[in-house]
Amino acid sequence: MGITGGDSGNGVGDGVVNKEKREKLRELALEATPGEWKVASDLPAYAIYTDSGRRVVQTPNQNNRKQWGPSYDTHGIDRHSDAAYIAAANPTTLLALLDRIDELEGMTPTERAVPEGYVLVPVEPTFEMLDAASTESVNKNGVMNMIRAYKAMLAAAPGAGGDV
Image (cartoon, rainbow, N blue to C red; front, side):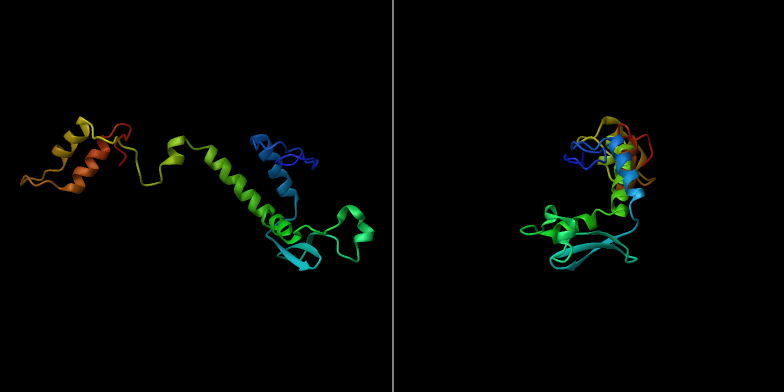
């Protein structure tokens, strides 16, 4: 089964890409011709090559269609878009996507939702946040430093742990 169904014989189909299926995709990508792929067109046939010039896939053209049989007819199908899609889904791209999925799955929901350098804080400041702002940010002349007040409030926010 393919990723979205169909019988491709690779054991990764039904539309659900769980960890087991990602590992099978990783295995298939590692066994495939490495590197970026690109499309070369010799209408009505298309071929996909690696950057080193190795042909990975080719659709039949008028000369070899008899050899490949009638099931490889290209009439009425936009083979260029199919070939471009296959080339874009090369092993390098697929492995990068699988690595990113694994990375995201290893994060907590908060780590995925909050960009680096940001923290979650309540909409309304807590008493502890206001107290920290007033006690930590006033200099010896009684003037409030807004940056110190802000940092003190963030450090006192629930769940911040003083890491700000």
